[in-house]
Each structure stands twice: as structure tokens, then as C-alpha cells.
Length: 367
Image 1 (cartoon, one colour):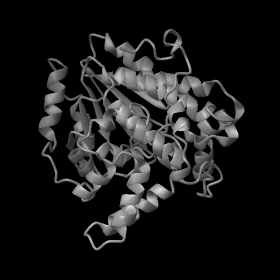
Image 2 (cartoon, rainbow, N blue to C red):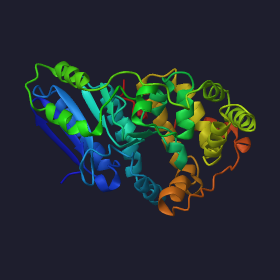
Image 3 (tube, helix red, strand yellow):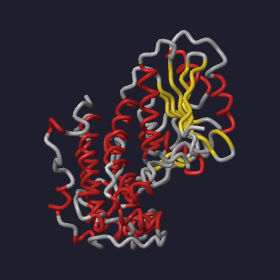
Image 4 (cartoon, rainbow, N blue to C red):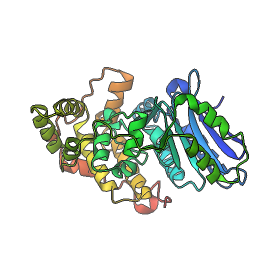
């Protein structure tokens, strides 16, 4: 069976990500299948709305999508495989298509929703989570940055939440995702089969009716703020530099305040990330606040090329981060440089230079 299953029932386009052994991690062929499906349905008069879900090794739901296939990234980078370039160009084009889709697009975000999974869901008209949802943009863990439009949607969260989530890769539960604005509603995971079946059990006059019915079936109340979303977090992650954030967390962790433990834990997380990429991500999120979605995706396409080609491949922070996490699994990445204090501003700035002239940019057609 295909890794992407697309079917039309009762006027609803149904998509199931079907690569459960890899937690539905996206391959280039999956990106192409998803794009072809959505383009075909965009102008299909029979399709009123679209819904997407993931599968689990024991059946449907359970997980949504763990992101891109990072083992492929590692192998392709070392081999100089041009398919790596194609993957990011086509994935970001798909992300833009979802955000601008003219019909209601509904994401069932059960289980793991990370990285590329966020790219498949953040542009949805209804982002539905459950008590099993584990949501994150954890790219700094592998020396990457929150891409797939991450600059756009993280930068639009309240206060410094975007900086905090982008830099730390903090995992959110379902209610936390709703509280911060990365999901719209929550349902019990046991309710999902009923909701999915309900999409095809009646005749819909239009796509809006599909959306309204789903909203009537789930909890759209705003939950309490996550425990980490406190004044200290907002103040620390609003500071102008990563170095200033580390200094503030160090001081806070040594003090008697109520958030000392949080500061110590957060500091430990940041110390395990690539110092260079922490600085790049901070610049990314702050630049993205002034960009449209299309311009943000173009910026991220520039950035990802620099991640894999800005240095010799053996010195790539991203290649090293993936090696340490998913290939050798020693979880001891050798970052270059090893300290935030050693990061050179010019190298951070280089991630935002343009590898292509505007007329030749791979995403020049996005508006």
C-alpha cells in the first residue's frame, strides 16, 4: 500500500499518511503524492473539504507525522544527492499550498506532530489535537532550524513563546498546543474514529458545513496557560541575544525564585544545542515577524541550503546533529563552535544571504 492514501467519500477528500514504522516521516515521494492529491482536489467540484490523519503500526491515528526523513537528509548530504534540494523545495511548496488552500483543510494531529508534521498541519482551517499529542519544532536538536514555515507561525505566537519553542524544541501536549495558539480544538483520542467516520456519513452542502460540524463535536475552549509560560520565560526569551538569555537563565537558576528549576532545566537544554544554530534560529524568528508566509518560506529555503552547503559537508552542523541523534546515536554532537560566546555574527548573517538571484529562486512562484 502507498505511503499516502488518498480517497474521496461523501464530498470529503481523505488523506492518510501510511508510513507507520517511520512515524510517517516524510519522504520526497510522499511530498509529491500529497502535492498531487491536493492540486487535483483543489479544482475538483466533488471535493468540498479535505481531512488528513496519520497511522500507527496498530492501525489508524496514534501518530500524525514525526517530520522529514532525517536519515535520508544525512545520506543525501554525504552523497551529494540532488534529491535533497528537491525535497526542501517541494516540501515548502506543499506547506504554502496548505496554508493557501481554498477549501477547508482539517488536520487530525494525534500523537507525534513534529517538524514536517507541523508543516502539514499549521496551515489547516481546523487543527485538532488529543491528549496523546506530542507537538514540537525540535530542529535545534539536530543542528537545523524550525523550517516548513516555522519562522512564520512561531513568530506570530504571543510574546516570546516563538523564541522559546524554536530555541528549546519544547514538546507540547494537546491542551498546551491549544493554549499557545498552535491548535484550535481538542478531542479525546477515542473520539477520532467517530469524527473521521462522521465526515463521510452525511451529505454536505459545502465545505463550511463540514468544518462547522467538526467544531460542534470538539472542545474549542481555551485551556489554562502552560506552566512554562510565565513572566520569567517571556522576559528571558525576549532578550536581544542568545548570550543574554544564557546569562539570565544562569542567574535565575542560582536564585531563590519560583522558576529556578525551570531556568536550570532550560539552560541545560540550550547548552546541548548547536550554539551557531541557536543564534541563527533567534534571528530567523525575529526576521520572520515582518515577512509574509511566501517570503518566510523563501528565507527558509535559503537557510536550509546554507545548512547543508554553507560549510564543507563534514563541518555541517545539521549533518553532525543528525549523525549524533539518529545515525551513530551517541547523542554527543561535536558542534563548531562549542560555545555561544564563540559564534561569529558574520556566520549567522551568512544564513540569510541569497544563494540564488530572485528570478532563479526555487520558490520564486509563491505569492
